Image (tube, rainbow, N blue to C red; front, side, top):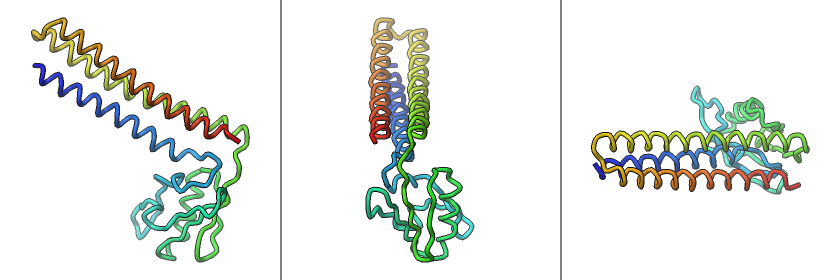
Length: 187
């Protein structure tokens, strides 16, 4: 029965780690006012009938802190990439010159920064909900094991380990979100 509970503990930890990784991926897409190719993670353009990530269709570079240059490997992909960027509602205005797409990243207004912080807090809360759900599943498994004859003292010890793990991952989610908030609020 101990091996079974250890397996549940590992599964819960993997779920918590997945929630953190998902948070980090989502936060990388939140625009900070600086040019970074990561803002296009998850932006898909139609390419020969298939939705394809822009990063797989083109080379994305940052010649300076406020400019992004997207150079597709196939010139036929310029229009779909441009349309995908406009449709992504990131507030970016692509300029297509027939060879490359140049994007000037405008500085964020104070109002937009506050909106971004709200979005970050929501993403962080979603990650913490996922972490707590993993803990709940683990706690249910521990309680069921105690009902099935697992020693109660050992069950309490496992529950404490589960809570400690939850606290650790919740703190990591908070720190990740705080770091991004600080990055956005820095003018």
